[in-house]
Amino acid sequence: MKQLWNDWTNLWNGDLSLAERIIADRLTVHSHAAAPVGDPDSVTDRHGLVEWIGQVRASLGPDLTYHTSVGPFLDDGHLSCRWLATFTGEDGAQLTKGGIDVLRLEGDLITEVWTVTGTRLL
View 1 (tube, rainbow, N blue to C red):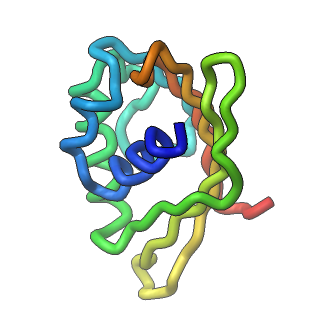
View 2: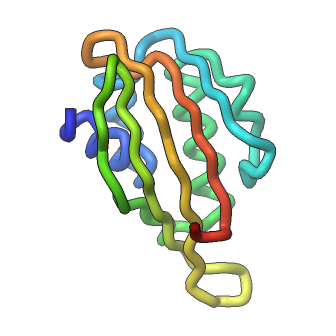
């Protein structure tokens, strides 16, 4: 399952071709309102997820990089992890945001995502 988590991270790092291999045709995303762009709660399939990731990447800049901070952990068909992302702000300052993702799996495919993101690093 560590490879699946690595693929999920690499998907968010811009390798959008990974979606075909790791995301189910139908997908549910649960997110809070702090997403920088788009409406993640309206994502219902692989294509919508790829579009949303592209929007997030475009809004935060080309140097946006996600990496694993803690985990991943696998329990009863759910994969979870704490991650950090770094990017350059509009003023040129290096910024870091963090989050926690929980992925529900069916076999080797991600079918549901809960994500919490913020700039306050706990």
